[in-house]
Image 1 (cartoon, rainbow, N blue to C red):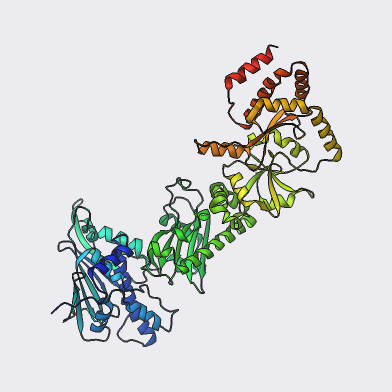
Image 2 (image 1 turned 120 degrees about the vertical axis):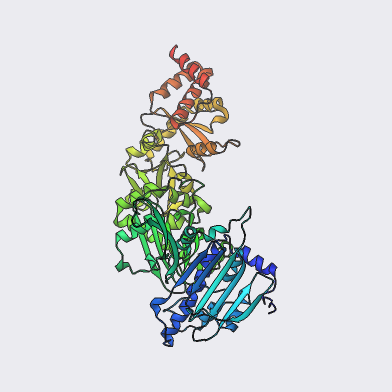
Length: 631
């Protein structure tokens, strides 16, 4: 019989379709099993709507046979089968799908769902096979037909005698390609590889996937001699845990699934199991790990939820389902509204996927807020592991997710001596307080000792401690919270409502020391923007503050990352107006004004050390101290 040509044109189209849609050759088995499952679904649907006779639903199965000697892989199903015309229409035209036509005609959509929708999955078989043979007998027909093809050159359809055991269904036989230096096709004949692929991609297909599996046992009558035998084994679990009603599941069910699926020795901290119906229908099962993975805060970590279509795996990790700020989530999404034949490229533009991702984002936030409100200890445990990621999320993408995250981030409180939210801080603010005050440093202990915090502490103002590098950058992007701006304790003007008497006293002291302070500023040159007397200091003689948006702590962080272009905050050297050191400075300036520069440099270096910044010239600093000690 002469070969017929594919209606969807040529080898170029076939090659382009296969190579662009499927990244891994192993996907062919998933596609053929899904097609077999569809065929059984159709017959099952027929039994529901038409009362098809001679069909026992319990007998539905997909069978795999691996013939290693002849390099043949066979996939059988006892589904609805295909007539000659259906073979012609479904397999003779690339991207023509009987499943899609069937789905559009279904009346009882809630009773059945069809996995394949675009008809291209079958042709993935040519990625691994030189020759593909399909023998099919339609339900209720006495005739069987064979479709055969060796690729884009064309195909033949002939009438054949159906196997006696084949009352209806389809048998697909793949003649696998020979191995090459780059490709190992023999691996698809290995029973262990087949089992692993089915567990990976098709574990939740609703019908049994069976295979005669070779096993070994101690030979009867011997103590150590082994013999091999074959046994029919069901390779898939069939019922996805996430498809079960929550009332049927216990904590142990979720925990066991999580630890096996995501290779974790610990139970998850939180389980989020949802079933959504509407414009986009899906089931999601997500977990918050109890500990951050060892590589979580590295570039090697790969985020994403497993993506399924009606129980069949589309993608092991789909990054588009999660924003980066929630990348700690583990889990999966299963939707019958997504096509199996979707690629990584088309996923990025898929409206349904975007709608699912948006709903997942809201659900995760809602669950975290609920945990924060009703189970604070658990939230603090979560935050110790993943709080840093939430702060990165505030800062990332120019604050695109700040509304999503602002109520979830926490910082150490100077008055509560524990982590607190921004909402809790604002609720405790003084009646006339204008700003949310914060101090930055390496540790809570070091921030506690900062000179700049003294006056605020004395007046009873709460200060948030920023100990992570990203904190100040994240807050700058956030800008304000509940209409309250953030202000660093190192800012030049804290604006905390000094009395008129305090203002008058400060102006008088500044005027008296005006010339001396100017001389000190000139001596320090471009190392400082200004030298001024300070009213914020109590016990400390000196400190550094900043003018403008770049704080000294931000300067340190930026310069530790970028070695080329160094930045410098507008530093202000503040000297305690009520400390004995000011009297010593006045005396030096009165008796030997040419020496005031040495004292200015000495105080500036002290202020640098307090801030954790390096002294520019350690030798000069050491000599200045010795000179002062020997006077």
